[in-house]
Figure 1: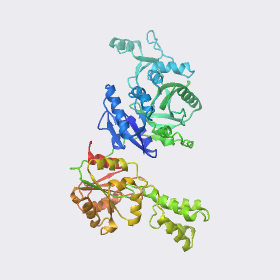
Figure 2: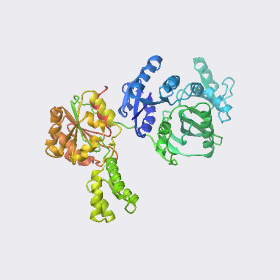
Figure 3: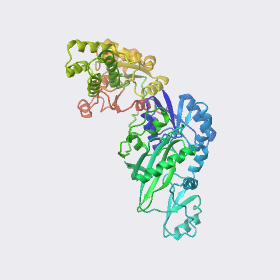
Length: 549
């Protein structure tokens, strides 16, 4: 398992990187941020609080310590502020095998200065606006002022007459700006891409910024005007030649009735670059995976960014023990079943007619929720004789995948709880040999959890005997335990009736069981008392139990 560190990643600007890295198999995301309480620490494997950038030595030392502790292989900046500090650490970290996704320091210093960046682009023949000297300007066209070292729309000014300029000069606030002709009516495009350490350039996502709020694009539409594409591709080549590395966001303005020009080059991820991910263009994934296959053509989309609210329950007291369901709570059950069946098909059905069709039908049945009668349904679909059905059934029972497909949030959550002294138990239904095989295929579960098999404990969930057996295995009373499971009527109702202090109903996308809120309300057990909490990942469970640890 590899780790990636997102620096200053706790806020809104870090979300794009967190979303991208969550889609890369085998990568744990660690967030480093100045503020202990932040939105993304509850969505990632780990969190590190770092000193403010003003404390340069302390900031650098905290980052290096976090990189060493978490085995970080890639470092991504989330905002403008940490680009130069990271570029100065780059050579030393590279010697330790750590890649920092930032440009060379010389190029960064130029790109972070709007005046120098404009000259760099103009000297390369790229279309940009020519700066205007405000003194003596006739204001037939208003002036647009950008802070030389600003980003986004922060601190920009529009001056429409000489009186406004005089007032600004009188206040002493007129210095430090690049002054440009103000464009009243235009269409704005953003180009999102990355340049890998080996110089490879990712596919280019181009989006029209349809609606902005607070300087951020909240509605974007995939569009690829030929003139805009040409400018962006030339910009990517220039950046690569000058030492550009990492993720970029380049903005192009198309004035009404005029020619397009580059308005900004941001040498870091665009805040709304999740649009690229929705197109199928994972920029952080491309940077991390140098051997990744050529991506499929990008799918044009219209993306809308929502503010989402996650509820982290406030528990009256920390549970001393946590009891967890296995299938679709810790282990991706559909992937496990598909892997077992794939092994069985390879073992006995590869010589049968059209094994690819057998596999396709099997995946459809699994995705539709078939488990217990999977082989029977396959046999019925293909009208197999009994001997063939039994042959595949025996091969399926004998097949054991080499590794259990645990969800990405399992290892960091269970490890953190275990280290904090919370006792952990598994409480699982289904035939015992099959469940033992799943646990054995995961060293993590084998080493830090106590397995309890309900069929050996007096009956499957929701019978009280199963939950009482889990409490006995942990040597704790039920009143000090918390349950986590995906099945409301088995896991949650059973835990509440057994006297557990709290229960988390975990609803993951793609699981076999998708609980219906209206059906839960008809029973209501534990809901009115505030004992049952619905979450969509284990990081929220970790946050609720450990608080700010």
